[in-house]
Image (tube, rainbow, N blue to C red; front, side, top):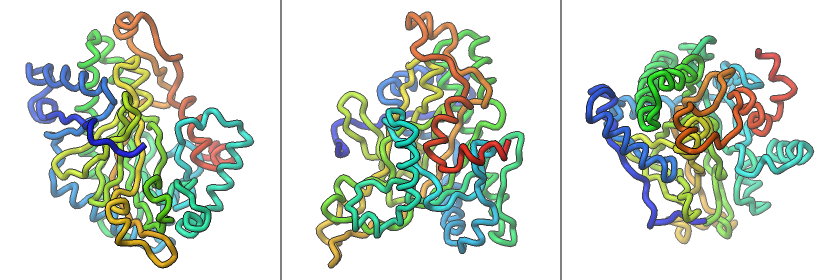
Length: 375
């Protein structure tokens, strides 16, 4: 479905958590307001996030300089196979986005889809085969993970200052994520002991900064209105913080109409979408937000940019994404208070590791073969 103009993405000022402390009356009111707004579609825009505008500018400058490096330089910190650790450079064609409905496919179908995505060659495939969505992410990524294992970064000789500056960005977004978590917990109205439990399962190696570069694409003009850079999906995280450059393209789904709401890039706000873990912990109070990435710049100028071969050019896109989730072995289930409120648990208990392993085997072709090498 196309993006709609009727639904809208709500905005909330989080400054009572980022500057004044969550114990204030303003903090309690903010948590109540956030719970109401999140319960609709699991997404909103946050102002008063405490992230300095100049740091965001630097984050995108750093991201562009990173992906402008020669491939051999980026491969000095390669992303290993498997779930642990989630860090380093992931080249185009190495990942396939988990899509809504993937669980309905057999293992044989999964392997065939992974094989197809590995062989997809980007713009030429999209032109020749009229592919509306690249089977594998048409992007490369660099991941930095906090926790027990030190993240793998590039040497300063390759990209001066990258490790120090990316760590600063990581720490600022990590601090923001825990302020958001505090608001989430307060909105659930748990007991003090339950609040501590929810906070505790989020402590440890559970944050990830993901720098993303979507490659320029030549897309067949006959399918450009339906073309997607990233298909509709939910995140495995508890929640996701996202920034995107002026190219834009991110969309959140309105659960009630099924249509999508265009996420307008803002320098004064960070967008947040709820992930699968928080949906389970909140017993559905905060629903996981389905989202995707489309080609809005192409759509806006399609008539003026059709090339002789019938394609239109989609520009490169950069984004800075931060995930907060739970510890691998933590039992993911709601506290007693939400279950009593709802008449019982809406989801089976699981661990993040068990849940993520089912998603990882769709995302990385060599996960099952090599994943254990990194344990």
